[in-house]
Image 1: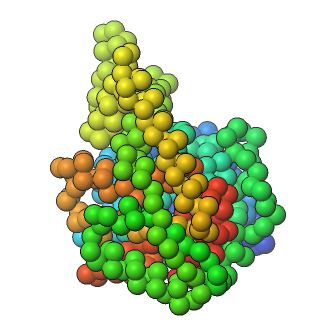
Image 2: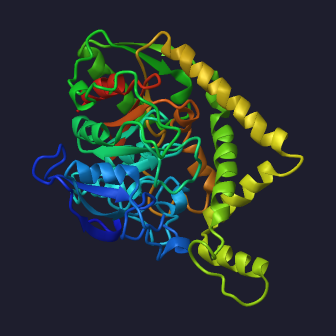
Image 3: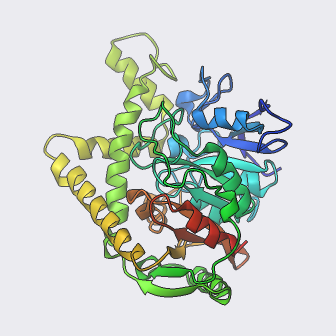
Length: 425
């Protein structure tokens, strides 16, 4: 067993263990998704002993489908990180590349599948947190269209960006899990019915890419590691041999996507995490002195450095006199990113890029340089800003380290990206 994949071991048997679509399958669940009676820590000291009184919608759907949940997986604290090293419970080793990070923030979920500790896993993706660990661990990860999967029971980091999604060893297996968790939920007003709601995502994993048009955004190759780029082109050549064709497209707005993403995400995080005051939730700051002192102690002791950094920056961006200067501009940039994707997808069925511009970092390598970690998200965050679906599928290796290929589709175009990705399985 690879080190520190699970924060909490559990065995929650499904309701239809003999006949459900996931009967006999084991699923690991990221530790920011509520599980009734099983602690949900978000990788934080703040919630070290928190036990939810209810299941997230996706967990209920897992149980209804006959799956057995085998544990809650390690993650960057409150989803804030790209390496699973900001977890209060320590870092997770990468089973596909020992001594390297598994990616983040859903690193434990990807590692569970890569190590064979679970057949499938759930993660959440705010700016690449499913696709990054899928690429680094050599597994498949799907980030659904915003609104396809209920977020009820997901501990919020940045509401307007995040989606729960599946991991699997193959595209078809990940798509089978997506079939179970997708669909409207009356407890989440952001969910929508997909246009072709009766279609099976797993059935789309037929590997038929004959005639598929692939757009390659040149901006998402600039600055990427040479070995990653070479592996990407080799994978694209494989798709071309199977009948797909590709052409270059441009996404000029992605130059500003990382800045816009972090302003929006940190602003939403500063608001969302205000509820963790040591009274209603989580680590207590004690009961001596005035309430403000107790509030400050609870958050000082309960949050790690990366979470504090993002709360402070988000609070600053939303403060009087700076809202228009930062947050409003970031939202304008988000609209520009979405417009660019719509334009690029008007001439292509899917877009393709390396999932991550670099191979997995060595453990400890990026902890002292947050900017290195933030910039590693350059290829994934634009997809969240545009609310689009994307899949990371293993593309090969560079210097013995896994490389992922990212396929991006139009809104609710999961079937298109799943079909294209399955050709590389």
